[in-house]
Image 1 (cartoon, rainbow, N blue to C red):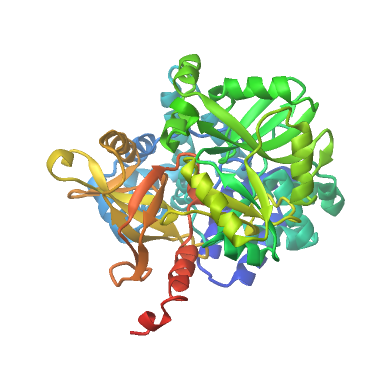
Image 2 (image 1 turned 45 degrees about the vertical axis):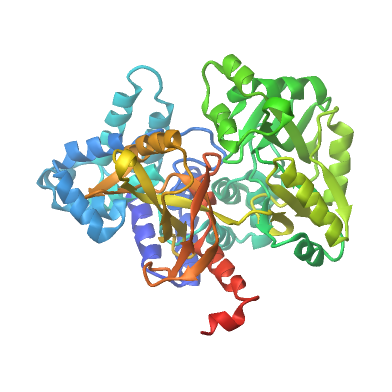
Length: 562
């Protein structure tokens, strides 16, 4: 099938807000695909170059993409900025530029149409280009891809490359479409997606083998699965109430969450973004090899950086370990770490995700080989839990996590089985979508950041405030370089960027504000950490911001009505 069909499908689902119609359109489309086209097409519609678990990355900078577009269209970059200002979408801007380019009009008349599999093969070649001359090779491949594209195809190819689809068709809707297309119950499709980590792979198996095929799915070592997520609770009392009167509380360490896979002597470590971080943590690999006796297992834990006296170092020190792939031995000495385990998902052929939390914890303790587990208490007493929270924060940790005693492990799901509880101000994980140059000693730095949350219904990014507080001068200088690399356009001293960087933001309150389209703004916002361990998809949604805004008034309803 031609790639043009994928682009036209995306146009159709973008043009409607009716979920059932979206699902019908996508289900009909994927049902008509050949077996080997299903996974690539499903991934592309969701804005992904590859399946979620695939470790390959395109590693294409915005500057590289810009260079190709300039060569193909001879566009004036001021013209690009003007169009983007009107459209607010990179893909739509590229489409208009391709439509108006005289060069493109002449070339595309004679090009052979791209197919879905050709696009995938070229994306694979881009991802696999490495070493000396790789940037030039990537540029040539992108030029080949866009050079054969119609304006509409170029729109969606660019969206796939930068990972910004924004059609409003999210993964949950894709699961429903796959269920309908191949007549497989939705609950089975959903469970298979959680287990495999990717709806595209599930769709492909449904096409080839139907219901029987996906019922055979099992964990695969070295193929990471999505992490179970926690909602936020105001205090331990709320968690105890939600969990039926008794719950388990664990330290929420100020570190980085990791998923560890072991098969015999081979060990791999995956970040919460499911990227392979094994090379950055040879010390963790050694500990797992020495102490974990199981032949095969999937463990979950937290690594924290340790300073003098055994106290945790700030999160950003740990991120230096994640980013480093050279001179690791020296970095291991500079930033020693400790691993704490807190869950066991799979061991020697047995999946534990459907077993209750208490049973998984017991099996983990039996198989941890002396590797420390996160501190834990089980209680129904809010006062005891509050003291446990105080002990955690006094020890330099982030807070505590409440876990329902009978809760299964639900990959990728953020539900009420787990609650995270902090003593600090409220915080949100938000995306930087623009920045302004500072004044005085910060005049050369992008130091005032516009913060946005994504609308989970439409995919639109909605600004909820801006801040110049929280980062050190060194961090601001590095952030300036990173933002310039993903800059889309400049408006005087303001720079609009691709939404690639997640930051954790504390604030005092969410207030009503006509200044922003969402109608809300953060009061006294302050960046507390740069979340390089989180993907843009993991940033908080505008729906969460709205829920917090509404919840504020449970204790001040009389003020809200004024």
